[in-house]
Image (cartoon, rainbow, N blue to C red; front, side, top):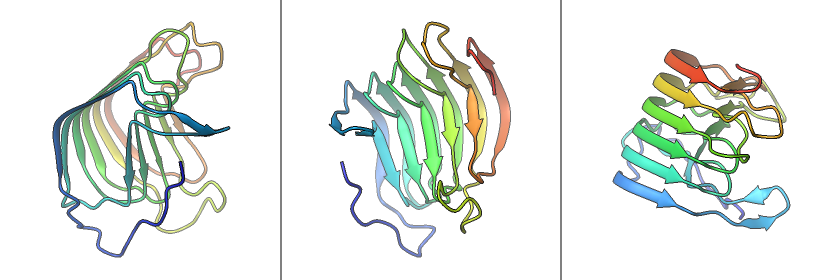
Length: 170
């Protein structure tokens, strides 16, 4: 459940390729409030290729970024237990052509973003760009759920986003 050490100074790092990958029924609660995400991207650079990814019914977030600049395209997140797409600690890549579909009574927010939860103006600033998104909520989730929750110093751009069935909105 711990992230270990990650990061570096090469924003164009190439950590390889994930293409046409489906991640299903993953995640486990390691300890209270410490679950495993479908896909965790820790300071992954823009030289990495991540394209055509589905995360289905993961216990925690679909995809979470901690820093980095990797671009992610053609994403489908379905029925995850927490947030669809979640970013923190200076992530500034691009996400294009994504669908987040909550299902049933589990889940939290379609998109949830922070900069640094302890030091809101820490550098580098989280500032991802999201374009061409479809966000489908579930009105049966017992807690408030947002289509987009951007907080704690994050910046970002959101282009061509359609959202429906969230109890709070954005």
